[in-house]
Image (tube, rainbow, N blue to C red):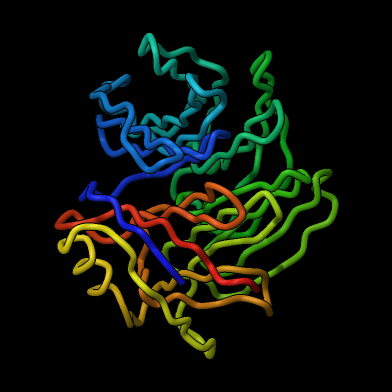
Length: 283
């Protein structure tokens, strides 16, 4: 399994665009990496002052992002905010009286996690219309919304990862299927255009997949190799009952599919966190 490593040594949140590139955000630093793996944009931008906290970010258009922000001083409420990456301006799309967690753009809607402060047993998936900002409830989900991760695929299915399980929701949210149980203390899930999933899970009985590190600086390669063999959250790729375990990329900060055959992962810690492009094997 070849992998290439980029020398951006801080953990980042990743969001893929439609052109094979990816946005990487960390604090006030916003970086765009093109399809060739080169940084073509990087700027410092802090659109909101504390106690606003920016959560998840996804791509709407090549020049527009959507971010969730939560007011964290005293009482939780939040907004969905559009960010213009050219003019560096923001526009509020929708307001909610609950905290905003992970989010994903699917069609002309933004599906997002909405949860109450201190409530860890259940949360609600809501959808905001990108044209008029109207919000509708999608489905209630068991789990902690503060740590939940969501993704979608081109068919309109939505995937939800909690600490207990990974769920699949049909486009109408009427069919909910449990795909994987007992996932990870830090759940994550992303879906490729063909519906191949990547998620994190506690080590199990799966055979570890061999890998080759291709490219990257010696420091990046050292960091990747240092992640191997962890006993916490390992990267899984595939579908339930047809997955591979890549123990070399433990405890990823974030990940995103660039294409069916390329998964980009931020792995490591504040002391060193390269961005790695993984080419998974055929499943």
